[in-house]
Amino acid sequence: MPSLRSLLTLSRRGVFSLPAFAAMPALADNPAAQHPDPPPPDPASFHFPRDFAFGVSSSAYQIEGAVHADGRGTSIWDEFCHDPCRTSDGKNADIADDHYHRFAEDVDLIGDTDLRHYRFSIGWPRLFPEGGGKPNPKGFAFYDRLLDKLLAKGVTPWMTLYHWDLPQALQEKGGWTNRDTAYRLADYAAAAARAYGDRVSNWLVMNETAVHAYIGHGLGYHAPGLTGVDNWFSALHHLNLGQGLAIQALRASGAKGRVGTVAACEPVIPSSPAAQDVLAAQTLDAAWNGGVLQPLFEGTYPDLIAQYTAPHVRTGDKALMAQPVDMLGINYYSRLYIEHNPARPLNLFFGPNKHPSPYYAGGWPIEPDGMYEILTSIQNRYKPREMFISENGYATGTPDASGVPLDDVSRISYITQHLHFLRKAMDAGVNMKGYFVWSLLDGFEWNDGMKWHFGLVTVDPVTLKRMPKRSYHWYGAVARAHENASIQV
Ligand code: FCB
Image (tube, rainbow, N blue to C red):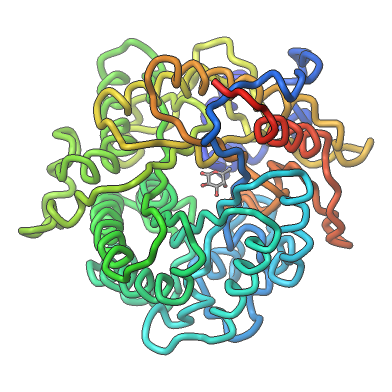
């Protein structure tokens, strides 16, 4: 039996909850608590340039609930959570945080703690229940209300178009394995730009295409639950193509905001120096980091994966994928540890981490220096105009008998460490313009249901009452001190 630590390291995006690990003993609420956290630093002790944005991130499916309200269509995640439910705790997102009905209170929470930037996604199945064709006016009206409330509260919207909730109607035609879906995304982007272009200053087309392609279409642990190399790379290419087409559509619509996208980028490390583990890690790096950034910035695929995308690439696609972006959002959580595994697509899978890292719930290592590593390497290779951390966050597990962990010093310590390495990257010449904590609220965490609590604010699962944690107040104070500082360097 491998040690608990080595099994923990197999986790990424809920892979920990695979059936093979189901018999594991429950984790302590916070494994990192074995390493005592220092007292929270003075919120005024962070120094970032004046135009640096402090914000919070969320996504539609993870918080909205109201899946049957006002004509919303079904998404691939609704399918994944029902008949049978494939989340590890058996929970679905039918209610989630009921943000759909409580958005005003949630926006007040953001503004009241002086956070001035909010990244959220709009739900494609709310706007187009069938994926395209007839729009759903009540769905459009919801995001009108949300945007108006944000602006009235002085919060800048960063609107993501696609955070994994594909309309099921499009999945029935092949979803991202069907080239046509890329064109449907562009139509949806144009419609969003027409509806919201007067109020959205920051557009983000995708969230984590690499994760959606690999975990959802290669491994099958996320919706739509497809597996195999061909589905993986067909989805990856069509997502990259759709991203390029949607960027073009946003620009053609005349929407006034800046246009960018969000990628999950993390250093990929072999679990051992053995040649086959090294090759496995290089291959995943090519699919995870290079497979998204290289098409966007250079119009090509990395050599190690080009043979898998080739059957799906048509003449002209390279130019379509390589669209200029005003900014690039990076989601960073931890390094990925990869080993050779002949039972998995491309003979690779998550493996043990030999570093003596602390861990947090969900089995993710805390490795803030990995953020510095990935940001400097992206800057050196691709030279994006500007970047920001679009997600970074800390989870606790199911509250223990002592109740909801509102005194979350470990989360404050996690954010502090990451801000330190982000600043270090800036000092090394990386053009970083913001940092967004994942997440405002504890919410639905994909195939792990409601198990992991990433929020600055917890939500009572029965009453849905919002309860701010210590980190909410502290992080707000960081943002406030930043806004108020007269000299920022
Ligand atoms: C990222 C997802 C986000 C959230 C965090 C914890 O991969 O983009 O929706 O679930 O992980």
